[in-house]
Amino acid sequence: MTKSNHFSEQPPETKGNRTMKKSQFRIWFLIPLIIFAAVMVMLYFRLGQPTEIVTNTALERPVPAFELPLLSDTSRIMTNDNLPDEPFLMNIWGSWCPTCVIEHPFLMQLEERGVNLVGVNYKDDIGDALSYLNRGGDPFSMSIQDSLGQFALDLGITGAPETFVVDGDGIIRQHIVGEINESNWQDRIEPCLTVLNDANDNNVSPDAIQVEEVCK
Image (tube, rainbow, N blue to C red; front, side, top):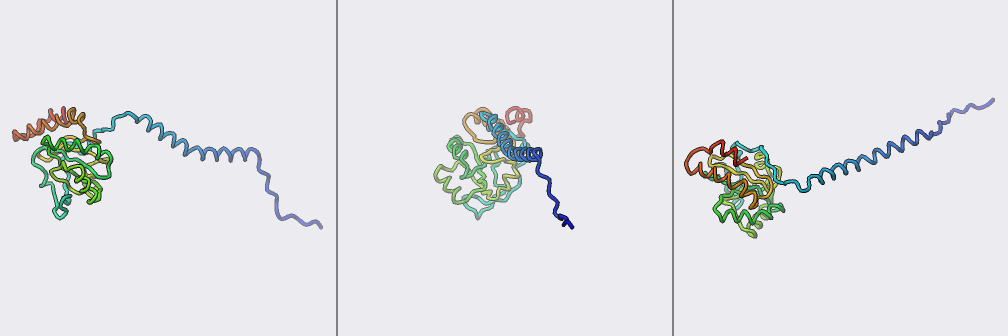
């Protein structure tokens, strides 16, 4: 009697199956390369594009309510009531921010010209922040410490530095993303601030048409 073979032979792998598996492997291998190439192409086309982006997140609304410590004396809690009652710039900065370092000397120039700047120290170590101001000078009438970044988030920032032009009633009229320098100061920020200061000096609300023309 012939013993029956209980183990059936598996059919040999065909050339077509091997080819299909190799093709699938190549596809999975290529996907990361395709994604990387797409990102590089996107970055290439961003080269030379303006880094300053005007966003409308915070425009035409009051400075968000806050209760934050004063950077120079953390025992003192600042609120919206401590903000200037005249037009001012609110600058988001951090000692860890390379562009803030580049911007800082120009902020010192603005302070010398009589521009009122309020600083928001964003997600920073207090010791590093104070050392930063000791080295480069302090252009701010006051700086509040936003260590958790919640106030900056309420403002709608995307990073640092960013600057908001605020009128005498605490309404945000202009939002500058990126570094303030002589060029955008003369072209955009100073004209807006001038309109707001004129209205404040005359105890009237800023003219909506003028604000639309020079602050946006």
